[in-house]
Length: 381
Image (cartoon, rainbow, N blue to C red):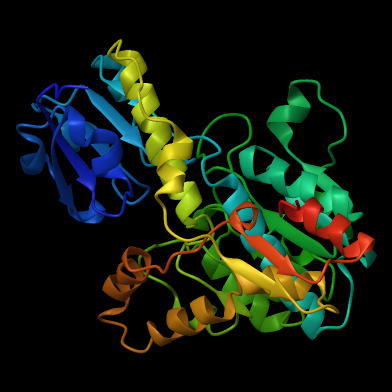
């Protein structure tokens, strides 16, 4: 395909840019958090991730005619302003949903091992059953885990099987938050968990947030956890990112710098979804398939089975959150440099592949283990 001569500005952390957009024009890569109006004076196309606020201030009096965010969430995009100004837009819903679900499962298996329980003996509550929540629901259900689901918009639409948030908080042993961040509408998620309802959480529970930081009032969470430190906190997102409350971070079992969805597979999938959306808007026939990009992503992880491994062993051979946790905690030492360190951890994040990319070789897993591996997303020959 011949270049259309576009000027493209993109977040430097978006992978496969050259592969997917290089033939369309010239790409200028910038740190996502610092992209400003002056950078876009000659830009036709803007590609971002979640750290760039895209609104009138950023785009006014620029030639940008298409904005893509290689993320599930869109709370950083003023979509109404884009629509009023006839600027095309696409997000990448579901692009990293599998990665987030796998991050959650890896963390839960870690805590289960440390506290000597089985996930199948616990009730997991999922708050927000959209792209990520559904994937987590499906995988945990296949494992035989008992679930409580809370999703008011879906319940309002007449779907069955959902419970009130208060019931979920009181009954779930493990609470996983996967809502988008909204501040308006019938069911705003901003400070969904706050000083008024945190006390409903049952003693000894596990609270995991891999959605958006402000879904939990972080100040209220810190104050509450100082009194209720029997609850295990697993936090990937923080209310004032890239600033992290070090006092809250010191109370978590696992803390990470908003990388739950940072699988290479998921990030490439997000870029490819934007490529497809832009091509469709411009009446260009897409020539590049997702499989082409993933095939160029690098070596697939291989796990050599010796016999006797557990599901936890194999999951953690692909992703074990302890290294991310250590690097994250190390980044909190200097308060002045902490926000920059947060972004550097994301920028320099090591390659992490999804379970489906893993090759299992060696000893054949038992029927029970094979069923568990298939349930959480591994591909068995």
